Amino acid sequence: MFSNLPNALTWLRILLIPLFVAVFYLPDGWLPAHLVNVVATGIFALASVTDWLDGWLARRLDQTSAFGAFLDPVADKLMVAAALIVLVDLERAGVAASLIIIGREIAISALREWMAKEGKSASVAVSYIGKLKTAAQMAAILLLLYHDPLLGLGSQWLGRWLLDLAAFLTLWSMLHYLFMAWRAMKDQPAT
Image 1: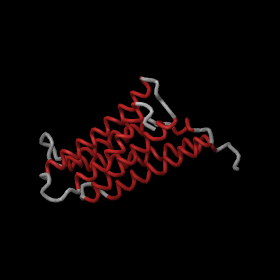
Image 2: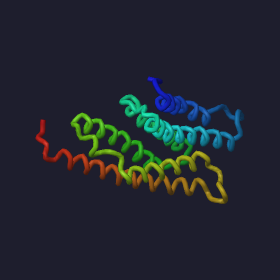
Image 3: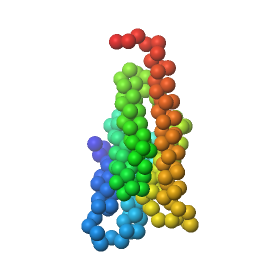
Image 4: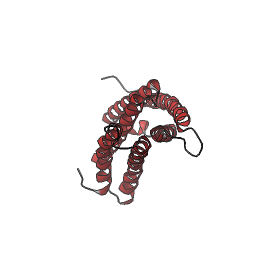
């Protein structure tokens, strides 16, 4: 489980989730509102960095594993889902965009698992549109968590706009992955 540094970083990301959520639900007065936003944003940013770092280290140190390949996307999806649920609860994120993003993550995870069982996982490998979606989504979440104006810009306005863009890219990438899976499976006999 913790057999190598990349997997340990992935576990750290999972362990940061309850801490991240708890920051927003501390009793009133424990932390000033602005500090709550800063701390939660910092925790989410740290988790985002560990997401990049664990993959980089796994490749660099040649410590890739089937368990790590399974756990890493699970950790990502749990962190994003937790953040979006908190943001919806705080009325900082739209319900529709959040449901689109969370629903797509579940659907594409199931699709990837099915395609892997069929020996066709390469057909639903991460695409450029998926990477754009992730970048917009992470920037949106960070801005919405921070909540206060940033460099004279309204972080809430920009965060909501980026979240809507991420939801659009989410639908587009989902259609892309479904098409790629259909194309890979269309000539295969039904079982």
